[in-house]
Length: 173
Picture 1 (cartoon, rainbow, N blue to C red):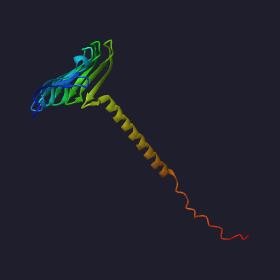
Picture 2: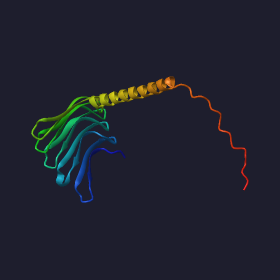
Picture 3: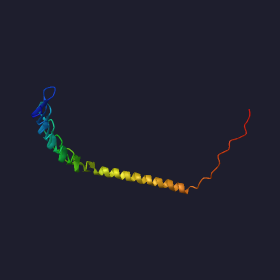
Picture 4: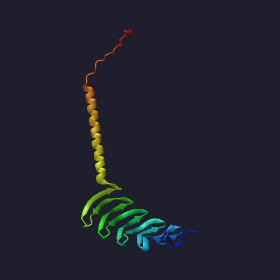
């Protein structure tokens, strides 16, 4: 038979760890993952077995730890991570599962600690630094090549000396 309706999964101690609705063997609707004592750890929406819609992760205290959205099984749109006191820890955007645009990281007092701009999941500044270093390394290598070529040109050809003749007189003992 196929999995239908609400399924609950329990650990060895008999505590509920998952609660998922199924329609024809596929996760459908809000799936919940639990900490001990029936405290919700995560809530994830599914459509036809694929992560689609809201996602929320909770601290054991019940305070929201992270929230965002999925589209076609990948993180999409604004995502926010929190400290346990509820203040924002980081926020930014995803596009088809990859970080995209401005991401901000905060300290517990709410001050921005760092910002990064991503394009297709890559930190733009880091990529620029990598590209710049590659370019500098290439220039160094090119300069070294030119210097070697210049040295070869400026060095007069060495006179061809015939190999030293072996002493043909053998000493007898």
